[in-house]
Amino acid sequence: MTLDEIAYNILNLVRGGKSHHDESISLSQIKFNIKYYRAMLLRRDFARNGLVTRHIEQDLGCVKLIKVDASKCCKLPIDCHVMRTEVKIPRTVRFNFEDAITYVGAIDGITRIPMAQPHMIKYLMWDKYTGKNTKAYMIDDYLYLYEPHEIGLVNIRGVFENPEEVAKFDCDEGACYDDTSEFPMPADMIQAITQGIVQGELGLLASTPSDVELDRHQDNVPPPSIPRPSQGQQEQG
Picture (tube, helix red, strand yellow):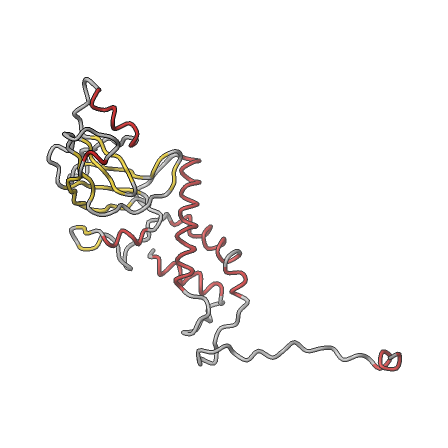
């Protein structure tokens, strides 16, 4: 199911299937609500079950790396070879004490590069057995590689807060995400998201009448009628 299908379904539920072209509730607002409800539910689900299914994971394809000045990276020595991604990586859903990056590694999608905390990178050189092994770490939404060993491309997968940001990355068949892509969320969460939005954020907006006159202006709603006093009340006055 795509994001458009989920958003249109919510709008039709709010309007009882009678929405109009000049609808006062924008689909962009509904999509925004869907995305942050998704992030909240995925975080809760991971905290409860500790499982990341392939249906919520997105692949960024082959991400290009560029060489950077190592002296600016976590106090590494000047002669240390460090590379980082050319573009920023989309922000991930906040899991328990970690970013929701599920894979960093070779472009075969199998050979994994271990992730490390940035503050630990400066100590890696003193490790007798793994000091020269490639490690990945995040700074300011960029992914860095310590001791990359001439790696020019890296494959990254993760659970991202805004799935639409993946559209700026290229996969073999084109953009890694577009309006026809399956929205990375299990179907069993759609009901919870729909109920939360309809009963919460859109509750007030739902009371606003649609522009049934199709003139792009607020429809003329008659003012509430004021009950007239009864004859007995008039005589007392």
